[in-house]
Image (cartoon, rainbow, N blue to C red; front, side, top):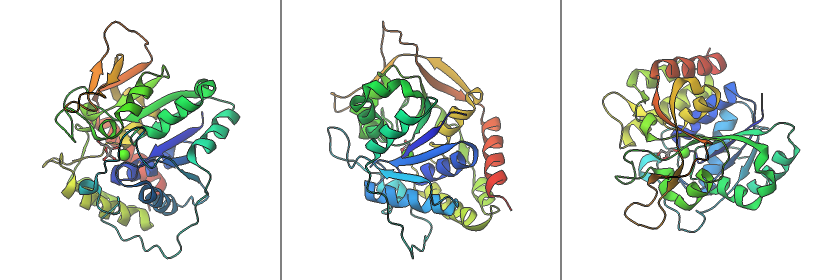
Length: 306
Ligand code: BDR
Ligand code: CA
């Protein structure tokens, strides 16, 4: 299978997405951006999850400290001051991270791969857009981007915008307009895939640190995610992993989209572009939640089960 890269801002749902991706895809490395928290924290959180997953040698590189052209907006009210509140990580021996910047590392990776890569992006799209702008000669090395962001209807940080697209709308517009094949998984489907209380309890049956970690993290997240309901809490980012490996779980609409950058009231809103037909952009409009959850539990229990 083609090499897979993750760009994230862990973040509770990013942490779950990372664990699931590591268990089922040939992940070559992880880059982090600022988003749910500042990038020093998202880097530390990615390290904690990678270590908990038992793959400490996996490449991890720090990317953007702030959006392309705007000040950073974080989501501390949802993910806590650490960005991963709800579990005590006991950081006794924090690892020294490579100082090689994410973009340089990605450049050498993409240039060296024999096959075009799959890129799963679950943060504000600052790193992805910077790569696209900086390396037009390497765009053909990206086979597909599966991203969590945006919404055809509604929003979560404002009435009309989803968080990742709101934080860096300029980056989102660059990525959506790049012509690279994209699967966009937005709130239209992530608000349908709710992790119930019994699902959160089920994490405890996973062995070692992963089980207790996911249980603590998602107990916190269910209390703080504003779109959690009696039915459960949205687990947004892992759906972008599912979309990369199992697009058949979703209903897709082919559409050309852009993102509002100028009007402050609609900042980050997804808009359908009339009259163009790049044909490379697929938006998820529905999800078979039964098949998705059966797959997610199979992956988690296959890798981390007792
Ligand atoms: C997205 O925003 C972040 O808070 C989550 O990690 C997810 O990527 C949901 O809108
Ligand atoms: Ca995220």
